[in-house]
Length: 296
Image 1 (tube, helix red, strand yellow):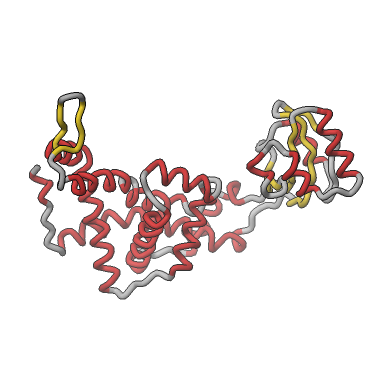
Image 2 (cartoon, rainbow, N blue to C red):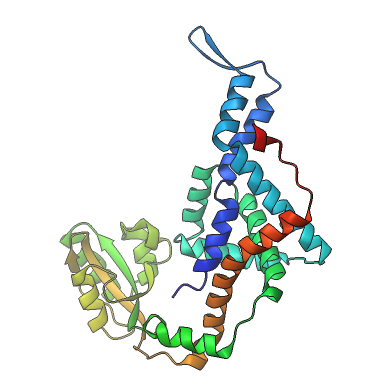
């Protein structure tokens, strides 16, 4: 169960067109130049470019800026401040969701955003969260009902934590296995020999995984091994794996009291998502907002 799913939906609504806003404001930067591009003898003027950006993104971009400004104004009024540690904590949650900070950075680069851009939007969301929480009530009955209806998603599946060294051929696999048998360090061998570069840098560590996650032959072997043992080479469609099991978690049925805080966060995020639209409408009625693009 991902307790941040509701949170992400709102954050995405805040940053979903952040890249478009950046593109849109390129038009303003270029507005100092009469001609921004040429195609053969044909010129593309700043006015054409700006009008094109406005027609595609202008209304949405400006609307998002207005919404974010309302959050900022109300947060200042309530003296809401977000600690940098909390922003970094949330950033790491998103990095984990995308499969690591490097993967998240790749997504940001493709969107024309920076880590600082995302952190700014995370701060905006956290301020919104603080503004909306006083409007939301969650009862113990709601918590228990949600848990009972979604109990299976909270159950702890049997999991194994393993590292591996992946090589292309059996000869190399046997060579590595012999070195390990002679006392060579598994992590160092992974860095030197493993073709799985993603895990090799971490000594071959694959983290915890449940059944149904890995290829069948690899998984079958890993779950059958004892903690601390190293396998003989295991062949899969990816090559030859030498597996080291470093930890195990037994299957465990979820207990409500153990997950009460997590359930609370899930429901709170869902209610914030629902409450955001109503709050935004109230704010727009309270403040005098002039949007010049509404008539464009």
